Length: 260
Image (cartoon, rainbow, N blue to C red; front, side, top):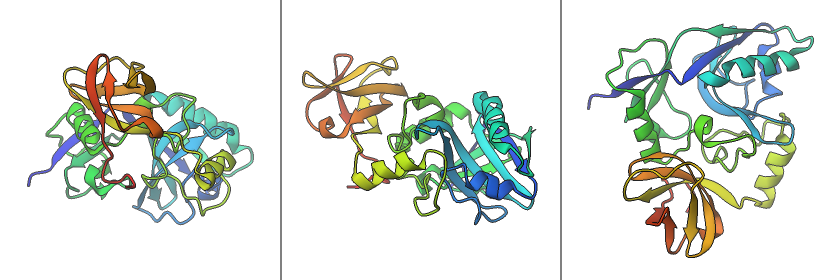
Protein backbone atom coordinates (compact mmCIF):
# COMPACT_ATOMS: atom_id res chain seq x y z
CA UNK A 1 0.00 0.00 0.00
CA UNK A 2 1.30 3.44 -0.92
CA UNK A 3 1.67 5.57 2.18
CA UNK A 4 0.18 9.04 2.35
CA UNK A 5 2.78 11.69 3.19
CA UNK A 6 1.99 15.24 4.27
CA UNK A 7 3.95 18.25 5.43
CA UNK A 8 2.64 19.76 8.67
CA UNK A 9 2.97 23.52 8.44
CA UNK A 10 1.17 23.71 11.79
CA UNK A 11 4.29 22.31 13.49
CA UNK A 12 7.76 23.81 14.01
CA UNK A 13 11.09 22.76 15.52
CA UNK A 14 13.21 23.97 18.43
CA UNK A 15 16.72 22.58 19.01
CA UNK A 16 17.98 22.31 22.58
CA UNK A 17 21.69 21.49 22.68
CA UNK A 18 24.69 21.73 24.97
CA UNK A 19 26.23 19.66 27.79
CA UNK A 20 23.22 20.07 30.09
CA UNK A 21 20.47 19.76 27.45
CA UNK A 22 19.09 16.36 28.49
CA UNK A 23 19.19 17.00 32.25
CA UNK A 24 17.63 20.42 31.69
CA UNK A 25 14.68 19.06 29.71
CA UNK A 26 14.32 15.93 31.85
CA UNK A 27 13.52 18.10 34.87
CA UNK A 28 10.92 20.12 32.96
CA UNK A 29 8.99 17.74 30.72
CA UNK A 30 6.54 14.89 31.37
CA UNK A 31 8.70 12.48 29.37
CA UNK A 32 11.99 10.72 30.19
CA UNK A 33 14.69 12.61 28.27
CA UNK A 34 17.79 11.09 29.88
CA UNK A 35 17.29 7.72 28.14
CA UNK A 36 16.23 9.20 24.77
CA UNK A 37 18.59 7.67 22.21
CA UNK A 38 19.72 9.58 19.09
CA UNK A 39 17.08 9.08 16.40
CA UNK A 40 14.42 7.93 18.87
CA UNK A 41 11.08 9.73 19.14
CA UNK A 42 8.89 10.25 22.21
CA UNK A 43 5.73 12.23 22.98
CA UNK A 44 5.40 14.50 25.98
CA UNK A 45 4.49 17.94 27.25
CA UNK A 46 5.51 20.95 29.25
CA UNK A 47 3.03 21.84 31.98
CA UNK A 48 2.43 24.85 34.15
CA UNK A 49 3.33 24.47 37.86
CA UNK A 50 -0.38 23.74 38.67
CA UNK A 51 -0.22 20.87 36.14
CA UNK A 52 -2.08 22.29 33.14
CA UNK A 53 -0.98 21.85 29.53
CA UNK A 54 1.25 24.53 28.05
CA UNK A 55 2.88 22.73 25.09
CA UNK A 56 2.45 19.30 23.52
CA UNK A 57 5.85 18.12 22.27
CA UNK A 58 7.47 15.42 20.21
CA UNK A 59 11.04 14.81 21.38
CA UNK A 60 13.66 13.67 18.86
CA UNK A 61 16.95 12.43 20.29
CA UNK A 62 20.06 14.05 18.77
CA UNK A 63 23.73 13.36 19.35
CA UNK A 64 24.18 16.77 20.97
CA UNK A 65 20.76 17.34 22.50
CA UNK A 66 17.05 17.11 21.72
CA UNK A 67 14.87 18.44 18.89
CA UNK A 68 11.40 19.55 20.02
CA UNK A 69 8.43 19.44 17.62
CA UNK A 70 5.85 21.98 18.81
CA UNK A 71 2.81 23.80 17.44
CA UNK A 72 4.17 26.47 15.08
CA UNK A 73 2.15 29.26 16.67
CA UNK A 74 3.60 28.37 20.08
CA UNK A 75 7.28 28.05 19.10
CA UNK A 76 8.16 31.57 20.27
CA UNK A 77 6.39 31.04 23.60
CA UNK A 78 8.21 27.72 24.09
CA UNK A 79 11.59 29.34 23.48
CA UNK A 80 10.69 32.08 25.94
CA UNK A 81 9.61 29.54 28.57
CA UNK A 82 12.78 27.46 28.13
CA UNK A 83 14.90 30.60 28.42
CA UNK A 84 13.12 31.47 31.66
CA UNK A 85 14.05 28.10 33.18
CA UNK A 86 17.59 27.99 31.77
CA UNK A 87 19.36 30.01 34.50
CA UNK A 88 22.95 28.67 34.67
CA UNK A 89 22.33 25.48 32.67
CA UNK A 90 24.78 25.01 29.80
CA UNK A 91 22.20 24.80 27.03
CA UNK A 92 21.47 26.60 23.79
CA UNK A 93 17.92 27.04 22.48
CA UNK A 94 17.45 27.80 18.78
CA UNK A 95 14.90 27.46 15.99
CA UNK A 96 15.32 24.83 13.27
CA UNK A 97 13.66 25.69 9.96
CA UNK A 98 13.18 22.16 8.64
CA UNK A 99 9.56 21.06 8.22
CA UNK A 100 7.76 18.23 10.02
CA UNK A 101 6.22 15.42 7.95
CA UNK A 102 3.85 12.55 8.68
CA UNK A 103 3.00 9.30 6.90
CA UNK A 104 -0.05 7.08 7.22
CA UNK A 105 -1.62 4.57 7.57
CA UNK A 106 1.81 2.97 8.02
CA UNK A 107 5.38 4.12 8.67
CA UNK A 108 6.93 5.12 5.33
CA UNK A 109 10.63 4.66 4.62
CA UNK A 110 12.68 7.24 6.48
CA UNK A 111 9.94 7.84 9.06
CA UNK A 112 9.71 6.83 12.73
CA UNK A 113 6.59 5.31 14.27
CA UNK A 114 4.36 7.84 16.01
CA UNK A 115 4.90 7.14 19.73
CA UNK A 116 1.27 7.81 20.65
CA UNK A 117 -0.33 4.86 18.86
CA UNK A 118 0.71 2.72 15.90
CA UNK A 119 -2.55 3.53 14.12
CA UNK A 120 -1.36 7.10 13.49
CA UNK A 121 1.54 6.04 11.22
CA UNK A 122 4.94 7.73 11.16
CA UNK A 123 6.67 11.05 11.72
CA UNK A 124 9.84 12.63 10.29
CA UNK A 125 11.86 15.84 10.14
CA UNK A 126 12.70 17.38 6.76
CA UNK A 127 11.18 17.42 3.29
CA UNK A 128 9.70 14.06 2.36
CA UNK A 129 7.89 14.52 -0.96
CA UNK A 130 4.30 15.13 0.14
CA UNK A 131 1.47 13.46 -1.79
CA UNK A 132 -1.33 14.52 0.57
CA UNK A 133 -2.40 17.62 2.51
CA UNK A 134 -2.30 18.45 6.19
CA UNK A 135 -6.10 18.44 6.13
CA UNK A 136 -5.97 14.80 4.96
CA UNK A 137 -3.72 14.02 7.92
CA UNK A 138 -6.06 15.76 10.36
CA UNK A 139 -8.94 13.65 9.04
CA UNK A 140 -6.87 10.51 9.68
CA UNK A 141 -5.93 11.64 13.19
CA UNK A 142 -9.56 12.29 14.03
CA UNK A 143 -10.61 8.91 12.60
CA UNK A 144 -8.06 7.23 14.91
CA UNK A 145 -9.62 9.16 17.79
CA UNK A 146 -6.56 11.12 18.93
CA UNK A 147 -7.03 14.74 20.04
CA UNK A 148 -4.82 17.50 18.69
CA UNK A 149 -3.51 19.18 21.85
CA UNK A 150 -2.50 22.26 19.88
CA UNK A 151 -6.12 22.86 18.80
CA UNK A 152 -8.28 21.00 21.30
CA UNK A 153 -6.91 22.35 24.59
CA UNK A 154 -6.95 25.65 26.41
CA UNK A 155 -4.94 26.89 29.38
CA UNK A 156 -7.31 25.09 31.74
CA UNK A 157 -6.78 21.58 30.35
CA UNK A 158 -4.99 18.87 32.32
CA UNK A 159 -2.84 16.46 30.25
CA UNK A 160 -4.80 13.42 31.43
CA UNK A 161 -8.01 15.03 30.12
CA UNK A 162 -6.28 15.08 26.71
CA UNK A 163 -5.32 11.38 27.14
CA UNK A 164 -1.57 11.96 27.46
CA UNK A 165 -1.41 9.09 29.95
CA UNK A 166 -2.99 6.72 27.40
CA UNK A 167 -0.86 7.98 24.49
CA UNK A 168 2.57 7.48 26.07
CA UNK A 169 2.93 11.16 26.86
CA UNK A 170 3.66 10.92 30.59
CA UNK A 171 6.35 8.84 32.27
CA UNK A 172 5.05 8.39 35.81
CA UNK A 173 8.25 6.57 36.86
CA UNK A 174 10.75 9.27 35.84
CA UNK A 175 10.51 11.41 38.96
CA UNK A 176 9.93 15.13 39.17
CA UNK A 177 8.84 17.43 36.37
CA UNK A 178 6.98 20.73 36.36
CA UNK A 179 3.34 20.02 37.26
CA UNK A 180 4.14 16.47 38.37
CA UNK A 181 2.37 16.59 41.75
CA UNK A 182 -1.08 17.35 40.33
CA UNK A 183 -0.67 14.96 37.38
CA UNK A 184 0.44 12.02 39.53
CA UNK A 185 -2.29 12.64 42.09
CA UNK A 186 -5.01 12.61 39.41
CA UNK A 187 -3.71 9.30 38.06
CA UNK A 188 -3.13 7.69 41.44
CA UNK A 189 -6.49 8.63 42.92
CA UNK A 190 -8.47 8.09 39.74
CA UNK A 191 -9.72 11.68 39.81
CA UNK A 192 -10.40 11.66 36.07
CA UNK A 193 -13.90 12.93 35.46
CA UNK A 194 -13.49 14.22 31.90
CA UNK A 195 -11.58 13.07 28.84
CA UNK A 196 -11.32 13.95 25.17
CA UNK A 197 -13.15 11.40 23.04
CA UNK A 198 -14.35 11.35 19.42
CA UNK A 199 -17.97 12.27 18.82
CA UNK A 200 -19.95 11.26 15.73
CA UNK A 201 -23.07 12.89 14.27
CA UNK A 202 -24.66 13.68 10.91
CA UNK A 203 -23.74 16.84 9.06
CA UNK A 204 -21.13 19.55 9.61
CA UNK A 205 -19.26 19.92 12.87
CA UNK A 206 -20.94 22.17 15.46
CA UNK A 207 -19.04 25.24 16.55
CA UNK A 208 -16.36 24.74 19.19
CA UNK A 209 -17.92 25.05 22.62
CA UNK A 210 -21.30 23.65 21.58
CA UNK A 211 -22.82 21.60 24.39
CA UNK A 212 -23.06 17.82 24.21
CA UNK A 213 -26.21 16.72 26.01
CA UNK A 214 -27.22 13.41 27.57
CA UNK A 215 -30.96 13.85 27.61
CA UNK A 216 -31.28 17.21 29.33
CA UNK A 217 -28.01 16.92 31.24
CA UNK A 218 -24.82 18.57 30.06
CA UNK A 219 -22.32 15.85 29.11
CA UNK A 220 -19.52 17.93 27.62
CA UNK A 221 -18.57 20.28 24.83
CA UNK A 222 -17.40 20.06 21.22
CA UNK A 223 -13.77 20.93 20.48
CA UNK A 224 -12.58 20.81 16.84
CA UNK A 225 -13.93 18.62 14.06
CA UNK A 226 -15.24 18.23 10.53
CA UNK A 227 -18.28 16.76 8.77
CA UNK A 228 -19.55 13.80 10.76
CA UNK A 229 -17.00 13.82 13.59
CA UNK A 230 -15.31 15.98 16.21
CA UNK A 231 -13.31 15.69 19.37
CA UNK A 232 -15.26 16.49 22.51
CA UNK A 233 -14.33 16.94 26.14
CA UNK A 234 -16.93 14.78 27.87
CA UNK A 235 -17.87 13.65 31.35
CA UNK A 236 -17.10 9.93 31.61
CA UNK A 237 -20.21 9.29 33.69
CA UNK A 238 -22.45 10.70 30.95
CA UNK A 239 -21.06 9.31 27.68
CA UNK A 240 -23.55 6.46 27.48
CA UNK A 241 -27.21 7.07 26.74
CA UNK A 242 -29.15 9.40 24.47
CA UNK A 243 -26.54 11.92 23.40
CA UNK A 244 -27.22 14.91 21.19
CA UNK A 245 -25.37 17.93 19.92
CA UNK A 246 -26.84 20.99 18.27
CA UNK A 247 -30.19 19.17 18.15
CA UNK A 248 -28.72 16.14 16.36
CA UNK A 249 -28.30 12.57 17.56
CA UNK A 250 -24.66 11.95 18.55
CA UNK A 251 -22.52 9.14 19.90
CA UNK A 252 -19.16 8.91 21.65
CA UNK A 253 -16.89 6.01 20.80
CA UNK A 254 -13.80 4.73 22.58
CA UNK A 255 -10.70 4.47 20.34
CA UNK A 256 -8.60 1.31 20.24
CA UNK A 257 -5.99 2.82 22.60
CA UNK A 258 -8.66 3.62 25.19
CA UNK A 259 -9.09 1.16 28.10
CA UNK A 260 -12.24 -0.94 28.02
